[in-house]
Image 1 (tube, helix red, strand yellow):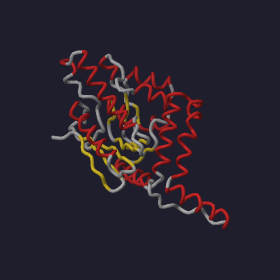
Image 2 (cartoon, rainbow, N blue to C red):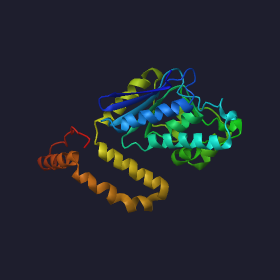
Image 3 (cartoon, rainbow, N blue to C red):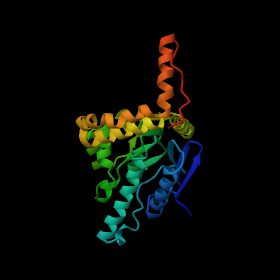
Image 4 (cartoon, rainbow, N blue to C red):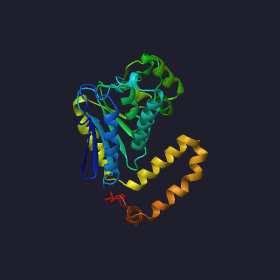
Length: 262
């Protein structure tokens, strides 16, 4: 049975974890995720929603086979996991993750790769790794630090506490909290809204933030115009800027544009 599914619904791609009962992330799920990402990359999808079936988003990695792996195999496996998560993070379209229940370990590290995280009110997040005396293998601790600061990231990594969604929102890790029974609808609606936006501009913002994360403000400044100026040649910009100028001159509100994503 597949552990992950991917469907393309118009402009929206939906990836869903379904490895009951804990949606643990193992070799099979990673293989299926790579296939799903390839499907998304060659599709016309302009946004991605990541969600999970069941009461919990994910308990994290499937640790059962780990003791049987040699160190060489372990490195190869984890490098593949990291590459796949990074590929999701670098998709040139907006990504939204909907989190319910427990989002722990590798599941948390996967959610952190998305641009926007929606969480149900009862969702809990955390790093389980210290409970088995290892580190966050897929970049979780420093991605939390990027969002919430070093001291908070260190505290959560050292304690493996289950952090409520409200606290994660307060520190900027989660974008929006909604009632549990509204999570799927709210996250899907938001993702569909992003899918109707200026896709290439969204991709440019992602590229700028990635450059900033690697090299800081100075590095982002250096790449700004290489990334930004090609946007002026897009179909969306060639329609939107004249429409905005006409609205300005006439004193009318700027019109909502039917962006085509190209």
